[in-house]
Length: 453
Image 1 (tube, helix red, strand yellow):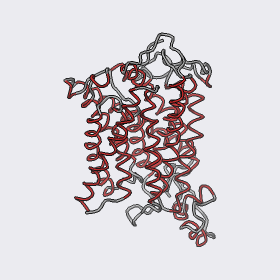
Image 2: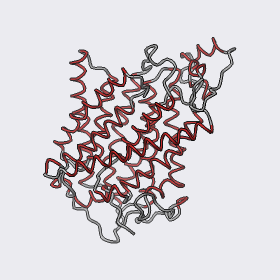
Image 3: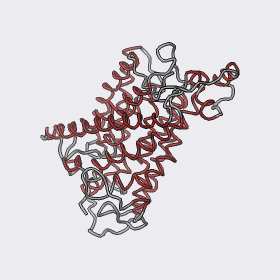
Image 4: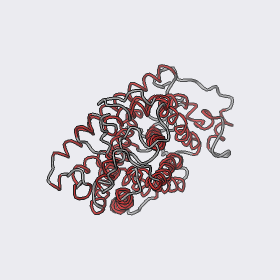
């Protein structure tokens, strides 16, 4: 089998952990990966709190349900088909079917990677937690208006036909890996991918009925802070777990996962102070996420000092794109593009700038005399942007041909909690009041496939 060029495994080798051709099972590595898998899985419920706090009370439950549903629909699709499409075979573009329905995925410490010290099934499900959180991230652009059945169908298909191919190209020995594009833990595969999908989804669905007409404010800022804190905690599994071992590489990734967001917090707070004289809690929580996104592709490729530099630089593009988006007609409701798309692009490019072979043992970036790496990283970004954008558009049109994408205006007015789930986050909330006042009013379904009345 072709040796898959997953930077995680190569990073471990570079830190002095090269394994034999037939490696021994490692209890220490397995123990760490058990923890890391749980941490990454926690990120999706954490995202539910982060997103849920940012919307209006009548839509809080529906917003959180979008993340929680990914734990089921995306996970099952990954196990049955997505894993084998993403991480099997010698092809440059898509995997084969050797792991279809988890066939040949057992407790042995061999699998898609020639040298591995943890059970194959553990590695499979660790990778699956990445697919889950990536699909859930897209929901932030369509909250408060996308019908739940349409969302379920969309994220299931998206995980198979958008996430899995890009994972193959970057992490599964595909053509971007062969080109030398590096993404340690998901800057391209996870964040650019979801950020571009989010902006396309926002454009296809159109704006919420109240967008641009009245202030749409977060209903529970403490939820936002709680979600950000849990995301940061889970991100240690996301980045440090991507070493696949209890190793020095994991230690470097974890250190950088603390330092980069710390620097982003400082710069973001200073930008807020200079612009408004205040630092908002939502802004600080957003800064944490942006810093985490920026360092993800470079977590084990740069020194801690340059992690600080990346976190500081990364604050600027996301901050100003967020301000631009708020003044535009684009209803990317929770700024997935500014945080994840722009942050992911920034991190991927800066990986090509600040990577040092003296640190990672694998490749140099611009500052170490290899400017070509920046161009390679930029090319990988371009491929991810084009593919994710085009396929997301096509999948949304396909789903829209099967079931309406967007809730009717009256459904939006009542609230997505009541109309999509028949229950509410708060029984005395805004939706409950509207239900009482509109109980006798028929709810119209959208006539157009795209969801307009």
